[in-house]
Every structure is written in structure tokens, then in C-alpha cells.
Amino acid sequence: MILTILSYAMIIVFMFVIMKKKMSPFTALVIIPLCFTIIAMLAGVADKGNIGDFVLEGVATTANTGIMLLFSILYITSM
Image (tube, rainbow, N blue to C red):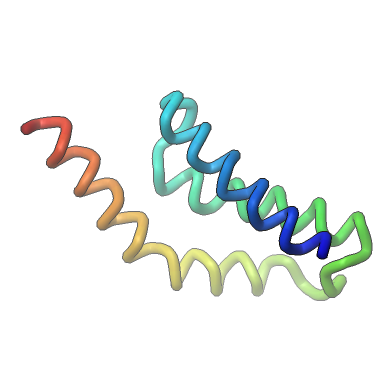
């Protein structure tokens, strides 16, 4: 249950940060999940393994999404 709440909170925080232009989309795709992972670990919900491996795997899987998101934002704002 707590992971579901954290997931929805992460999406809300991500959308807020992107819409208010506090971070670039790619930076937000890296930093916000990392912060929520640390919160989940401190709450005792997530496995206390090596965070570095999770971050590298997450960056590898979200890099294409971040690039497409950045392209779409730049393309739509130029229209």
C-alpha cells in the first residue's frame, strides 16, 4: 500500500516540477525517483541493496524516454 502511495506521489511531484520548470525533464527523471527510493528505504519498504545499481539501471531504461520527452517539449513549444 505504501509503495502505491509513494508511486502516485512521485508522479505528482514529477509533473509539478516539470510544469513549474524547476528542473529539466531528464534531470527530474533521474533525481525524483532516486529521492523516492531513499524515502522507501528509510520507511523499510524497499530492499536495502545497492542504490547505485538501481540508479544506473533506471537511467539506462529512462534515457530514451527522457530524450523523447525533451524533444516533444522543445518541438511543441516551437510550434
